[in-house]
Image (cartoon, rainbow, N blue to C red; front, side, top):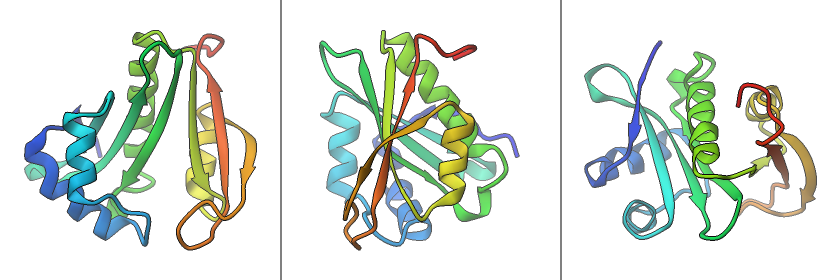
Length: 155
């Protein structure tokens, strides 16, 4: 499975909302929140498309002005596309995008009960550095993970 990776546009709003309904059990973005991320926030939203322009995943990178730290704010892969390299490809693209914008650190939060995501992030050089109790709306804890980009071999 080799998806096409591209920046999201306003035309992707319905598909982004639909993907979250299928892939996430909670903590979903509303259409309004996606609209803000696409048009107003200092952010990049990457989408992965499969055949027939079907959305397989997305990832949003928040970039703060005058900061060398980027945040992987949201990351979602369609259940049917998991474990096929879609997430890894998106994560590598977003990491490279952060580096290209002068960032030397990438941070994210991930559910402690998501071993697949934790494994992906660890395999890409992210290290847990803070435990966040009761982080998600259902009370699940999270790990804050960080990847130092300036010292990362190959990105």
